[in-house]
Length: 427
Image (cartoon, rainbow, N blue to C red; front, top):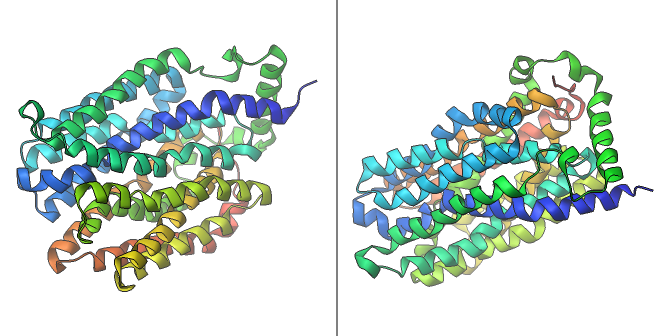
């Protein structure tokens, strides 16, 4: 006799740790420029505005190729397409070591965004192929712990690699890009051999478990009777999808505004590079500890909207308060609250589109939500850089990031009738 929880647990242990490690490496390669900037900016002549522009332009490349990449994953299969993405971004990430000035910095960051496009929404889509709706927030929460954990481990690691300065006549920040880019290429090859595309191909499950899981996921899509009547174009123009993209924009704007500037913000505490590596890991450690539990609580309550709004509001209030709380120790505590709020909101958010999208509509719409929302990843770092150059400090930039989170919380509450009761989409 099949025990559903045991099957879900078995699939989870087989897939989630590996996917989490992939995302861990992905996020390090995406944001390690924040640590490289501690010495790179001076070495190649980057102003705060130029750095903010280059750090954020990653997301413009990401935006342009996100939906096509996700549709390709749906067509060609996760194993092939995720492997292709990882090999591509590993090569470009390591090539960041060749940056010689502002122009090449901006160009390679843009190419990195193109190379990575489709990875995260592709994994979110892939998880819908394997896990019933009732388990998705906690599964996504477990997967997304890679984001804060990549900073918990990656920040001290990046600070350590900056210490390689002069080895082989190569600057430390160049070693950072090389040594953190190569693992993605190697893992892309591993994906080809490790990931099955669908439950029907899962040799690690018994035939009975494969049949039960396939039937359960098929029944969930079939139960959504409206799903059969909606095309990909309908999904991409659906108000509910666009509202979710707007909410995600606010969250991502704040997320990357913090991640890509936090090392330089912490530099104002009078710390050494190694100390910055460890101190900046603390907010992400707090975020990781609460991320999975908050997603699990949302699953248990069967409620998304108020969980999402609460976490986003905590982050917004904390970010606005950060410049005004005084001593660096208290500032760090407030940043911990901000990090917890941003990261706790993410798994709850991604359980919403996975609950009403199916088929190619899911591939396209999840890609659209992620690509439009990730334009916030351009806006956040750029605005912080612009305001810092104009004012000389981080205060105005942090307030803008906080307002982004509060806007996301308010949108979730005001649009609640659509987030809770929207029609299903699929094809």
